[in-house]
Amino acid sequence: MVEQRVFDSSLWQDGDQLYHSLQSTCIALQDEYGLAVNLLLLAMTLDQRTIALGEDCWERLQLEFNSWQQKFLAPFRKLRCLSKSQLQEQEYRRMLDVELMLERNGQRLILNKLNQNYAAQPYQAPHWNLNCYLSMFNLSIEQFPELTAAA
Image (tube, rainbow, N blue to C red; front, side):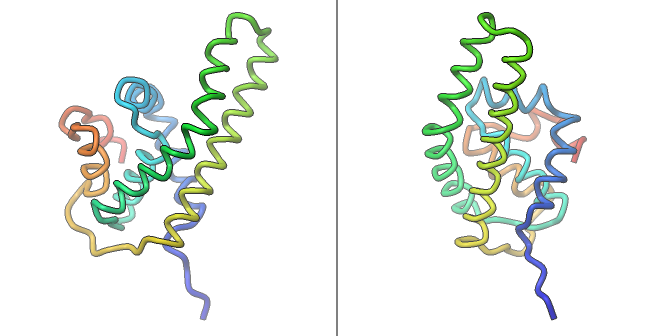
């Protein structure tokens, strides 16, 4: 019998659907509070699937992902934003495509970390993962009801 992996690429398919309905909130949380959109979407997707990660898992994932993001994604994103007014639309779109590719690489990194180091735990309560992730930034789901409404 083939064992189905708990942490697989379908997490990102579900996360992409959430992102489309919450894009402005996700970007605002990223820009104003420093949240990683991929980890936010992961928390929401795991909650939809009633799969829990421990609080310490969220802290380690944030540290590991943040390290990668600061080396690769953040510098490129900053360059893209600074270059926007200097580029033609087609050139700017290419930069957005590269940034999306980097985001996908970040998603693969997260999946690899999850599959190597983390085990799903019994589900604790509604929005467990989202609460854990937001609390790392001193935020709560009550501040962003659209996150729970979309899930």
